[in-house]
Length: 146
Image 1 (cartoon, rainbow, N blue to C red):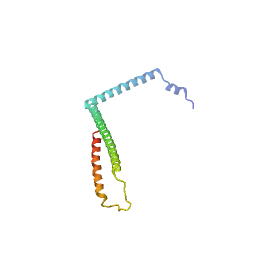
Image 2: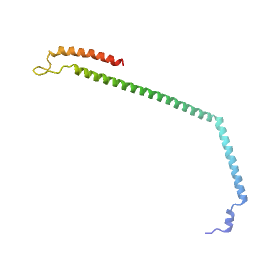
Image 3: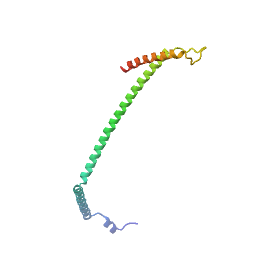
Image 4: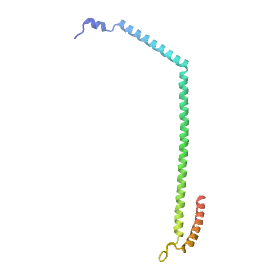
C-alpha cells in the first residue's frame, strides 16, 4: 500500500518540529540534572556517602590484616617444615651410623652345635651392647656439635 502525500507531509520533519524536539530534549536534560543534584544532596545529607566510604575503608583494613596473618602463618609453616626436614635428616644419619656400628661390633652368629638362646652368649652380648651404647653417645655428641 502506498501512502498518500498528505500522510507523508505529516511525518516529515519540519524546522518547527525539530526545534520543538530540541527544546523538549533540553527540558528533559535539565530535569534529569536537577534530579541528580537532589539525589546527591539527599545522599550527602543522610550520611550514606560517609557510611559507604567508612565501610569500604574497614573492609580494606580487614583484608590487609588478614593478608598479614596469612603471610606470617605461611612463614611459620615453612620454618617448621625446614626444621622437621633437618631433624629427619639428622635422625637418618644417626640411624645409619648406629646400624653401621652395631653391624660392625656384633660377632658373627655361631649356631652350629649350640642352642640359640644359650646363657653363655648373654654376658658377652650385654657387654657388647654397653660398649656400643657408649660409642653411640660419643657419636651423637659429635653430631650435635655440628
